Length: 144
Image (cartoon, rainbow, N blue to C red):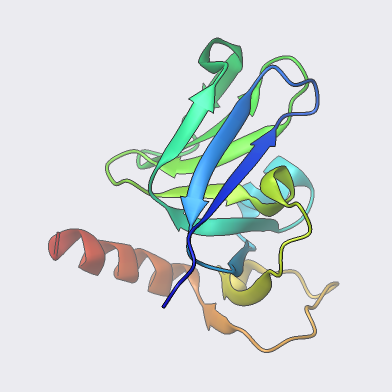
């Protein structure tokens, strides 16, 4: 039986705060070129978060990084707040935004085919190429 936890976090300047509930302890790493450009390295995030409460919406800027997703950040301090699929209830929340010493487990890596050779994670993970990620979301969307 899973234990649901409420996680809270805020941007660097405090203008935006988030609250979410999760029963997972896993973190995913995204190595796609956009995530690495956005943050200077892989995005380490809580994946598949479907509900997020946000305070300070007026301080958020959103960027449509593709036809299917957007990225949000605080317009004052630039803190990355989330990556969100536009047509599904799926958020990826940067782990550092809500981390309070949690017992996270890095269990998956996506867009592994775009990961540069100059860094590696030590633990074993489930790895998916970009094509496998798109296929999984298409299959998930068709079953909804």
